[in-house]
Image (cartoon, rainbow, N blue to C red; front, side, top):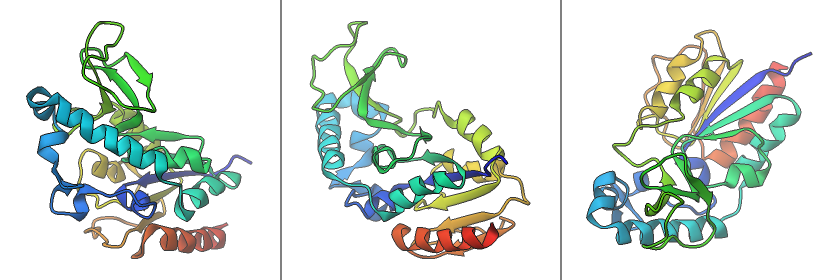
Length: 230
């Protein structure tokens, strides 16, 4: 018998427990930076060095961080379910925890690309510096979807969400679009679970179970509920 398709949308809340700071926790500041100064195309044009410095630091932070119990539990669910992770996070903690189907909506911190050609993408573990060029001789930039940029993977994510037998949201405020809109692609009859310390407005959703806890605790509760559904 085919495994049920379990689709999980994750946000900053799941990585926060691994020590990675989020801008939404601090009034639009991210590690003391105004996001508009480091995470928009305009910021890149205005001060590329500042943007590179910011993401070089983020890369170091992610390299030091470790997957937490929530990441590991979602990876373990692959034994019972066909698990697809759609993440708004740029870290690789889902992959390091063992998840095999991870779609990054907002890019990946350990990748860089040509500022001219989105198809020229490369792995990066160290720093990106001004003067580092892609094959097309354009400056390399973080492979991150910045604010005000289109989200190329959203259509694929919507297709995955529409096929869900069970849909779970972990650690996201459901206010950053287009990611927040993915829940609307899930069929009304499909069981839905939301795990977050601060549950967003969800009155419009049918078949919803709310778990108002941090990711690590909430995912533990989720596992018990999924067992009962078997």
